[in-house]
Amino acid sequence: MKVVVIGTGYVGLVTGACLAEVGTEVVCVDVNAEKILNLQKGILPIYEPGLEEIVTRNYENGRLSFSTDLASVIEGAAVAFIAVGTPPGEDGSADLKYVLQVAKDIGSSMSDYLVVVTKSTVPVGTAVKVNREIKQAMMDRDALMDYDVASNPEFLKEGAAVQDFLKPDRIVIGINSERAKSVLEQLYHPFLLNGRPIVFMDIASAEMTKYAANALLATKISFINDIANLCDLVGADVNMVRKGIGSDPRIGHSFIYPGIGYGGSCFPKDVKALAQTGKEYGHKLRILEAVEAVNDDQKKVMFEKIWRHFDGQLTGKVFGIWGLSFKPNTDDMREASSLVLIASLLQAGAKVQVFDPVAMPEARRELGNEVEWCTDMYAAAAGADAVILITEWNEFRLPDWPRVKTLLNEPVVFDGRNIYDLDFLQKNGFSSYGIGISPRS
Ligand code: NAD
Image (cartoon, rainbow, N blue to C red):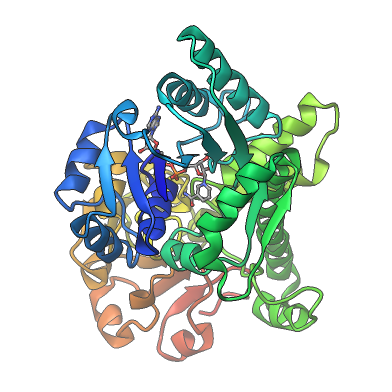
């Protein structure tokens, strides 16, 4: 089977590479000529564990190729995936201009029956618009032919995207045609050998499923962050509370880790977009409005702790930052909490020196020369008045604390992800702060 994937970012490249890995012939298409040229040279535009090997292997064996020209590669394809961005528009709703442009391009270039599958995260009703664009483009060239549209939202997690795609928990497909259903069943068959299902449903429900999933996950994060902040005030330890509630199987342990707010390219924009859909239909999603407000505040929590520790005297202070990406194992800096904290520190007159194992090139686009770029976590701590753990990369989990202590001006640690044992740090002469845990000094 031949497939074209349009949009070669986190979702499109992983989709294309993983489909090729199981034997499908895939062409990944992108309007960004530099990206495509680099991919043809084996240079990936993103960091994602395991992706480079799969891309290289399948490019070399000829199953995976890259192009900027959809019209020249669409012939013979059974499926076209739309995997372009859906950034927030001014009112928070998903901006569909890229998706609809691709739909138009498909309608202008397809030459035989095709299943057009939207993988981008799009609001309910988008499939109708995609359909309209395809039909109009065909009419414009007097070439009506059979096709079906489907919705196949993607649930991969950045940092574990390849594994998530190869061994999905489930595949959700919204569809209204038996013909398209059998094409997609065939395409996804190799990924279901672990016994996980394809959940077929109507298109509107599939479109909604993706938003509901991300909104619920964001809700769990904001909920535990709110509880953590109350723990701070009442003198409880949120780590204990988390363990205490997580052992109830109705609650579960996942996604109830407090921190400094969610970021990334999905949760912030998807929560906003779903809230906006609610408004459009006269149904205010009150929980989601609170989820977003709590998250915005949570990104400021660590700065407040730093401010209090230094009695507001931050001018000239130096802070070593460990981790910049919005979560570990990715270079994605979109909506990263680190950016909010760094902006506050700089505004307060502090100096910031940073290290991230992977995200520094990406972060440099945002931060330029405003911060000092360090070669490792110890260089970031050197001469600093405190270190601040922002992203819980594995390599930050067990620092050489005696070395850190000798490097710091003052032995102070702010742990934005609760990965350090504050009692241990206290015994070893550090003042330390977590989220939802009493500070130790
Ligand atoms: P991305 O920004 O990394 O990649 C999008 C790509 O589309 C870019 O390379 C861009 O050049 C290309 N593009 C834009 N217009 C195009 C056009 N007309 N023709 C061809 N290519 C075009 O985006 P992403 O993170 O991969 O997200 C894509 C979609 O998937 C979004 O809707 C997102 O919400 C959703 N999603 C993302 C993730 C994630 O973790 N990143 C997970 C699940 C779903």
